[in-house]
Length: 269
Length: 185
Image (cartoon, rainbow over all chains, first blue to last red; front, side, top):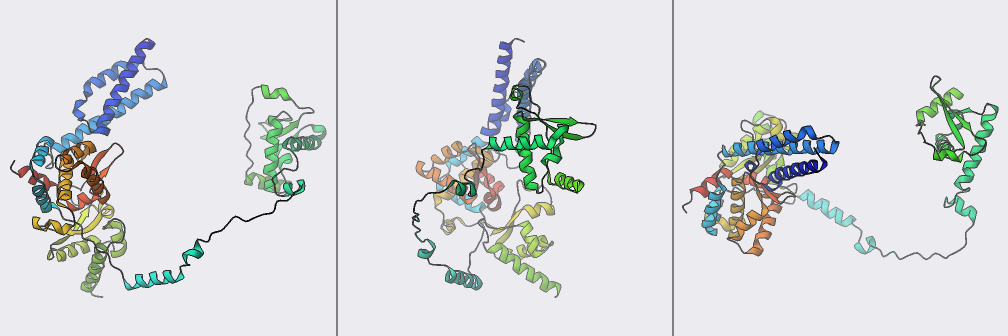
């Protein structure tokens, strides 16, 4: 089947779906849909469908067709019940009846719900207590004007203390961290991931793991995975390998959960 | 406590629950009655219904969805809503007692009758056209919105009108269709 033919077939299926939808959504007579013809069409096109989009469209058409068949079933069921009546006949009857006749007729079959509303002594007492405890509205809705604050100068230390500014820039912090890694790796040139990342507190460990991920991504270090030992090592580079960013990157997920951290601390002690 | 006294107390409590409005919607759910009256609440409601008959009132059950064909299960009853309604309808001279204009009642009868004939679902446009043949145009939309607000009709996102919980509780649908068809035209 050529692309043009495929496009035409897809459009036909789309029209089938729209027709089936109108039965569901706009109350169109379900018997206006020729189910046999649609099934034959779907069968004809099905062997030609290849892409997931085409197969999804086919499945959607089958699903809507099933809902049409269900509607046809409901229609037959309704016709067999005592409530069935020809809508045109009923419409005619309603149109010919006067307002008074319609209302009188409805009164015979209308059994309105009886309900009462009544206050009890306990409800009144509760409401009174609430009223007494209620703060007057002028106190509740006090007009709070803007507080005038005198402008002044601040220092860098103050901004760092308020965490508005960081003590170091991120790159400075990363470089310091890289030097720490080089120092800890020493002559072996590698260090166990957990021995480097692990710290006294869990929060500090998370901060270190976060920075380590940037060390690896930005080419300051690399990870060595040893599957047989089930260990992960970090190997710092002596200089930044900026060309690594151009190469195909592989993500290595490492869990730094609280349980892992506790286990590491126990082993270390 | 004797068995008679036990039931008398339970029937009194059931009447309080059913008569007095406690939520936005009138009536009480089956599970609420079970929690307050105990698992034999259907039996208590039956006795209350017998007593209300003398006053031409009844305990009415509106099931979720369609009314079960046979005896309802306990699960269906727990999900159903129970009300107290008038038992035998009103004489037509009492129309004013309902607090509704005759136009509103006639419009409601028309809308319900038409929706029933269309298998319980009809486009709002069609119902409006039918009402417009008897009511001034400006009242039609207002009335349909009122029927929806009161719980007689419901409308979906495709502007289809359905019969809602209050119609199921208050209106004898079969009798309405029979009366409409039985009129001489």
